[in-house]
Length: 182
Image (cartoon, rainbow, N blue to C red; front, top):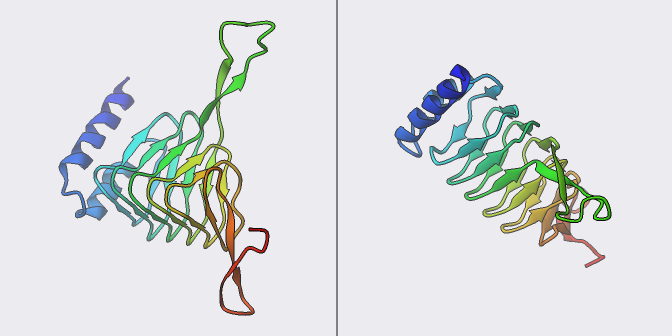
């Protein structure tokens, strides 16, 4: 109970700070919460952390306005130098499916959650949703408004609902090339 009160007071204090200033102080305050590990990163004050799971944010990462991290009981791990735009939703909670022959009144069964990982150097576009169990690969880009339900390989651009690979990084051409399947 005391930990929950402490957590809410710290979130309140973070929200009182200037939205795009005092990043070191915000990191220190968040690190005082059990389960939080925030390196020297830029977290805008309107970011929301909801749930009991662990949060890890690496060095040099940026988390934009109105982004929500809903952890359930699992972890959200954001590695170094990740850019997360505004209004992004990380949600690792879901439900098992009920057998309607055994429980005909609802399909949503027991709640469960899965970890989310965003690897170093990735970029998540505005208003994207990253669901539980997903890993976004190193230096990948999730286009604005995408719904990511599957792992994203390293060095690709994904877009859409559900997100699919649109471009791949080519070391040979030193540029992004269109995925030939689309």
